[in-house]
Amino acid sequence: MVAAPAIVLDGLTKRYGALTAVDDLDLEVASGETLALLGPNGAGKTTTIECCEGYRVPDAGTVRVLGLDPRREADALMPRIGVMLQDGGVYPMARPLEVLELFAAFHADPLDPRGLLERVGLGQVRDTRYRDLSGGQQQRLSLALAVVGRPELVFLDEPTAGLDVAARRDTWAHITELKQAGVTVVLTTHLLDEAEQLADRVAIVDRGRLIAAGTPAELTHRDGASVGVEFSVQAELDLAALSAAVGAAVHRVRPGTYRIEAANDPSLIAALARWLEAEDVLLGRLQAGKRSLEEVFLQLTAEAGDPDRADEAVAP
Amino acid sequence: MSVDAPLGVAPPTRRGPTPRTRALLAQTRMELRLLVRSAESLIVTFGIPLGFLAFFSTVDVLPTGDRDAVDFLVPGVLALSVAATGLVAVAIQTAFERKYGVLKRLGTTPLSKRGFLAAKGLAVAGLLAVQSLLVVGLAVGALGWRPTAGLVVVPVLVVLGAVVFTALGLLMAGTLRAEATLAGSNALFLVLLLISGVTFEAEALPDQVAAIGQALPVGALGVALRQALDGGGVAVGAVVGLVVWGVLAIGVASRTFRWEP
Figure 1 (spheres, rainbow over the protein chains, first blue to last red):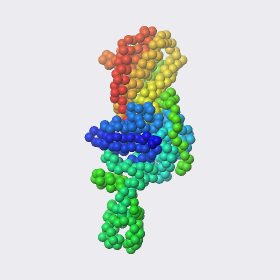
Figure 2 (cartoon, each protein chain N blue to C red):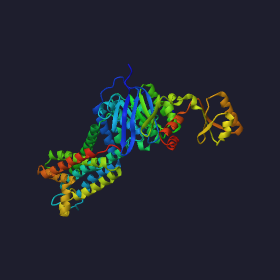
Figure 3 (cartoon, chains in turn brown, cyan):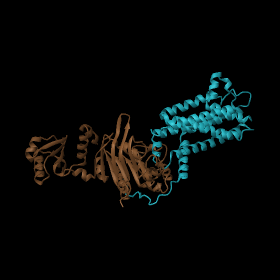
Figure 4 (cartoon, each protein chain N blue to C red):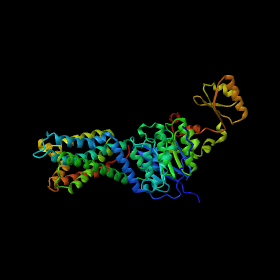
């Protein structure tokens, strides 16, 4: 028997005044799957998951989470989900341990709050007021609050926003553990490497519409042969000269990033390397035979709207 | 910092029923802790009423009519305590909980909105019980006050007042910006303290101001409490006034309260 999907969105539409934040969105999340909702700021990611969490009433369409209506059947749903909001949601004057103990008391069979605090690295600050924690510590407490009830499904809205590199790795490890424990994870991010690293499936949304969905491999291998060879350098290149040297057309994708429109091939790479050596240009990144998720994302969001905005959206 | 230890997050194979009583008590405990953790809240809920009672009972400068200041002040200070907790402390705390997204975050926990409001109510009741005991204890123990009547009616009136003021406080907290609630509830408290005839005889005020003061909930509660303590039974007009305020506040608050920042 195939497990029922964790989430089914059917024609979900949500408007704020004249703005359509989510536009006729269909999406299914399988039980146990990790789905990344990827999109520029304002794409409708947060609105989508807030409809799943019961915060927003859809203007049209239906939302089923664990088979339940998040608003009318909240009492049955809330014990089974965990939520990490984009910011805050914790009493500024409260201390991590007492907040975690409070949330544990809401659940029938919670994790041990003290142990959980240690494991997210907040053991040392368990009696520090929330408002005195660093941004990264607040984020980790928020993650702990989302999982203390041992949920079957967690919503993580930008779980690594504002974290430094080490803290981001730790959070990734925790999310991976959730996944291994069979928890369904829905996370929003505008970081492509995060989506690539964590997600079984990526759903790209832009202007409230679902513009692509698939595994990272599916998205990056689409129309494989025409992918070309993409590389980045810290210099402006003479496109005509390079094109003559490698015997294929060359395009500038954006400043510092170029694409050779030819199939991946050892002699092509050798020709590129020789030319770069002659020009004394240091190679940054080289990607052959597969597009980066970033490129897919840029192309799709550019097709869906004006390209400037898409470029902006993925700027770190 | 590196985190190697696993979280141990596997969902339970069989989930027990949501522990409603435990959740309610835990939330109540948190509400109470936060109320007493804020110095501003302690000053308004304990400092001002008790300070008023002690100071003006011993320094006889207020126009309190032809009786002992303490006899006049105890019902007024009880009314003030109720207003301080419901209208000021709870309003401000809840307003900032809304501003900081705490109310929103609680919306995706198994604690229902009803459970949340029940916890607020229990916290108010707990705080008021302590306030009332301190007011009465101070009056009896140090100021020579001897209550003769109203031992049944007074607690009922305090509870009624608590419902009215908490509803008014939540009405502000759920509609205004947190900063506006902070300023507004403090200003309102000060005005009510001056025009309600609870801290000095209303006859000292201009007639229209006194009439307005008596119609507002602090004045009405003060009148009702004073009549009960004086052995005059239930002040029907004042109690009806309070009930009307309560119905209005609850009706408007339940329609306009916003949980989100």
